[in-house]
Length: 173
Image (tube, rainbow, N blue to C red; front, side, top):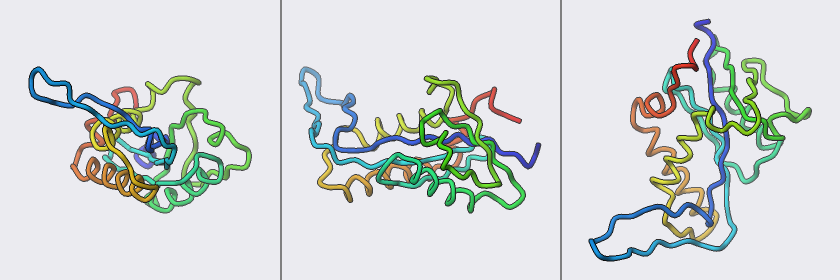
C-alpha cells in the first residue's frame, strides 16, 4: 500500500461572473463590491494529495472529455515512477466517457452522485474564489488566466497548505 497514493481531482470555472464576498469597511459604511456581467471564463483542473501535500493543476478553456484527457496525460507524467494513484473523481460526464483513456499509473474511484462534500478539493476551490478571485473585474481572458495562476501558486506555495485544508481521517491507506 505504500506505493498507492490517494488523489482528489475536480475542476472549477473561474471567470467574469465570479464570487462576491464580504469585505471590511469603516463602521457605519456600506462598501461596494464589483460584479461583472460578462461571460468570459476558464477552468482549472486540479488534483491534490493531502497525505503527501502534493498538487497538480492545468488551466484549460473547456470542461469536456478532450480537456480531461489532456489533464490526465500531463498528470500521469508527474506521478513518481514507483507510485500508483487512486484518483477520486465525481461523476461528471467527461469522467465517465468511454472515449477517456485512463493512464496505466492511475485508476478512478467514483464518488456517489451529488456528493461534493466528499471531495476535499472543493474546499480549495472555495478558498481560491473567496480569497484571491472574489470582488474583482477581469479585463480579458488572459487576465482571468493570470489571476487563476496567481491564486493557485499563492495557496500552494505554503508548505503544508494542501495537507492542512484537504486532509480527511477517512481518506488514508
